[in-house]
Length: 196
Image 1 (cartoon, one colour):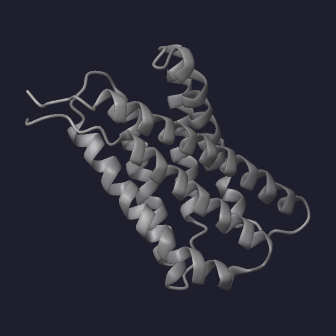
Image 2: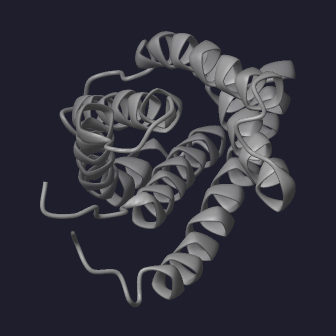
Image 3: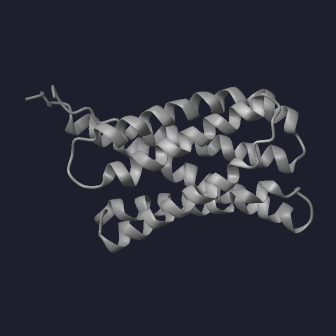
């Protein structure tokens, strides 16, 4: 190995972008603007989904540092990217992507268990704990709630759509917060790094 490249900052920013696009999809769905969503969101979501899939894949299979961070972050990012890419491709091709939310539900269980592991195994400590736990908790809840897309946005289910949008916006904000902070920290810490 020639050296360690730390892509976590851009991976987190990519995750935030993907979650934000999903939140916009839910918003445009509840507003009855499906064609607007198809025209404006499908291609960007495919691109971000592909990026997240590749980033998660590389981390899942090549993470060189000790610990289970490849399982904690790489694996769910890989699956999120795959679901986002596939769902947006289906949507672009005028296929109903709502059944993808069932798969997202199962990914949500994985992510919630990741949040539990962050607490139980003290995987994050100090100032990093709350943002990391918040990211896993909010994105996990967002994934668990995603099957509401199977319901038409009327009555009580319309309220669930708005709750889902808020949860996804919180998750996206936390991913951006951690990602941009990681960028600043990593620029300083890797400024004088030379591979061995």
